[in-house]
Amino acid sequence: MAQPFLLALDQSTSATKALLFDTQGRALDRESRPHRQHYPQPGWVEHDAGEIWENTLVVLRSVALRAHAAGREIAALSITNQRETVLVFERGSGRPLAPAMVWQDRRGIGLCDEQAAAGRGEAIHARTGLRLDAYFSASKLQWLVRHRPDLLARLESGDALIGTIDAYLVYRLTCGAVFATDHTNASRTLLFDITSLAWDAELCAWWQVPRWALPEVREPKARFGETTLDGTLTRPIPICGVMGDSQASLFAQRCFEAGTAKVTFGTGSSILLNIGSTPRLSGRGVVTALAWVLDGVPTYTLEGIIITSAATLTWLRDQLGLVREVSELETLAGEVASSGGVYLVPAFSGLGLPHWAPESRAAIIGLSGHSDRRHVARAALESMAFQLRDALAAMRGEAGVELRSLHADGGPTANHLLMQITADFTGVELRVAASPDCSPLGAALAGMLGLGIRGSLAELAALPRAETRYRANLSAETAGVLHAGWLAAVRRVTTPSHE
Image (cartoon, rainbow, N blue to C red):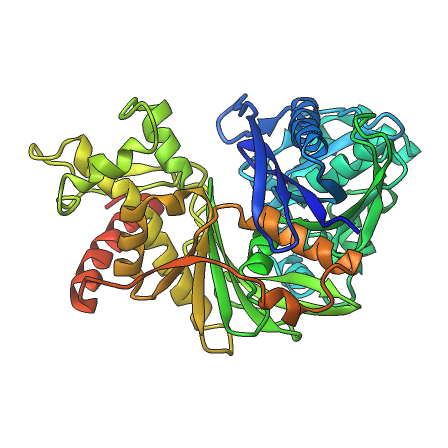
């Protein structure tokens, strides 16, 4: 029998990628297409889900056709996706009925305040493991049904459906035959009980979300129907291996044991720490989520959410015109030994863990006549490391397990200066994956489990992987002094008086 290959789709905040993996987890081919970011009002962030669907077909077809030409047999399609982004689409056609509301979108802040005023915050946290925050999907949906009564009517009649991006793409790829999501995506909505592993009727009522419009929830390694990629393939292939992007990267890093952790550097950053099969709730703003569910057994994580990470670097390029390519920032920042007292607090959409200041806004603090664009570039890189240090400190205090290792992945890990700064400021050895494609790899590994290509987590853990390790060069004392300056800058943007 010919060696099977897995086609993987990575639908992220900024682009849609297709990759082809062999059964050793090696990426053999890829195709990518960016999509536009829409900012119709301050605090609003939207995607055109129709554009995402078109890009999905383009990239999948390109890789699939090249695989066919090379005689490589595709065994299945696996999917990983941006998680909290949500949309309403038409039953039958799958046509989007409104723009997708992106995880960065903040228009639900007031609705979260309403839930808190009603005294529901503690109950929501206990059932979902999440904070009462507009980052997650529920307040976005409530805003949508309140402001679009036509959509509410269609949802209540059964003519419209609600889904995170994975459910939307599965629905369209299967021509409406399968309407399903996985546990990792469901657990990011503020509508899902992570202990009973089911949609919660009371939560749905509180957020005005029709329960019957939500997808079935399946395990990540389950089968999600079949697809011909809209007629591209002569025979259908199964969709197997569906996971939210951050959990998928945890899976790809083989963080299968309690105490193992990873950080994915992306538009935002997500730190996940495996805490085992028993959920632990935090009182310090650390969220609890499902890492995955396999054969009915859940594995939980603590998650630190950094809302704005590499998006800061894109902002320096696109909004300030500091460089023409983001990759130039490493060279620019490396021309100075420090930021010269400059701190960039990237609260473009508020701050996440441990500050949780949704209404704060970004600032560059500490500029002097000596400062130039090199210092600002370095301050941007340092902001990513400082935020990770803050998040790790909060998570360690809540985990109940020792932090055994910290793995890193994502496109920005190619920036060696950023990785060294991160090791310096956190004091933790970083193990950086050689491949930036951990999220699609994680989905593909789950697909291998589901197909029986790999028989166990131990077998997956034994697969080869390459990594680069970064150790701190700064003393803990020096890093502490610089971090104190960072915290002072954060207070400037989170304190109303800005004193």
